[in-house]
Amino acid sequence: MTTSTRTSRPASKPASTRRDSRRPGGPRTTPRLPQTAPSQPAASQTALSQAAARRRAAARVPHRWFADQLVLTLSGRRPVHALLGHALPAAYDRLVELAPQAPLRPTGRHHRGPDPEVRECGVYCPRSGVIEAFARITAGERVRALAFRLERGRDARWRCAALDIGPSVSVWSRTV
Image 1 (cartoon, rainbow, N blue to C red):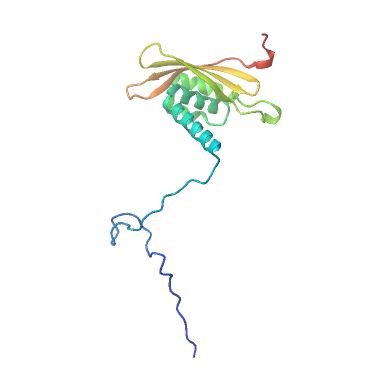
Image 2: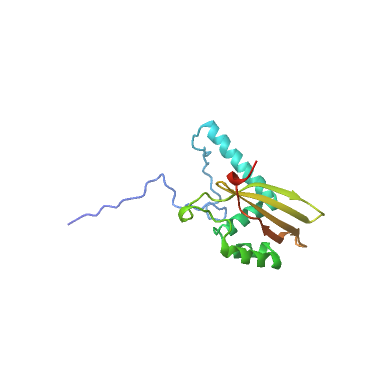
């Protein structure tokens, strides 16, 4: 005759892991320990917090956000239809015209040059609800100019009304 032994669960693990107050046992009563960030050097944490602050500030400024989105679209890293709700028909038609050419695509052997990025973004507000902006786009030694107009609609959303991109200029080929 053989006897079977039962193994039981360890007593330290709770049977239920739900955390809402609707469960039969009431709300979770076990205290949570504070989570600490992994230790990093102070300079690294400062650089990370500064970069996060720059990203948050850029997200609050509509012309900077739109310049970043245009760079992604005109470099071929994002499809044109990603900006469909952010552009008026005339500007969207211009985007559809420019996107296949990918004028901001990285150059170099096998398209492995540096990714384009917005170096500077300036703004002029001719009247309330209208922003005319420019951006300097750099990719290695190459600099491009991008100009666009944003208009605020009745729904308080900014949409691109016009768009133009300038010729490519090499930093080293300019005469000083």
